[in-house]
Amino acid sequence: MRLTRAGEYAIRCMVYLAHKGKGIQVSKQEIAERADIPAHFLAKIAQDLARAGLIAIKQGPKGGYSMLKNPEEISLLEVVEVMIGEIFLNDCVGRPRTCKASKQCSVHKVWEEARAQLRRTLGKVNLAELSESDSCIPVFLVHN
Image (cartoon, rainbow, N blue to C red; front, side):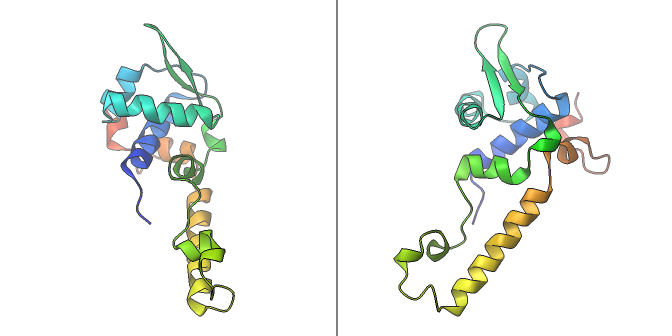
């Protein structure tokens, strides 16, 4: 599994919004500049995040994006899966019917365990931790 560019940009956007806080509206231009996301790409990503109920979009000259939930309530897993769908490391895990041997296959069990471990790891980390950690503040937040 490789995180897509859209997934990476969505994480940057959400960490930046988490740094600002729930309900704080931030312009698309500010997010694009501070999080190093192409503005046209940010608009598409924001649509996906809004459909998932993570952010609100306000159109117009005084518009922007704001978080709908507290940063502590949004996991890294949630943001990633909004953008790329549910994480599967192999087709046989996501679509067992595509593999005739999946029920008795020893490799299938390894894929399932690895998937579960990755999802647990990403699910344990929330946006508040990523945006406020003194030891690991993303570079793009330092320029506040």
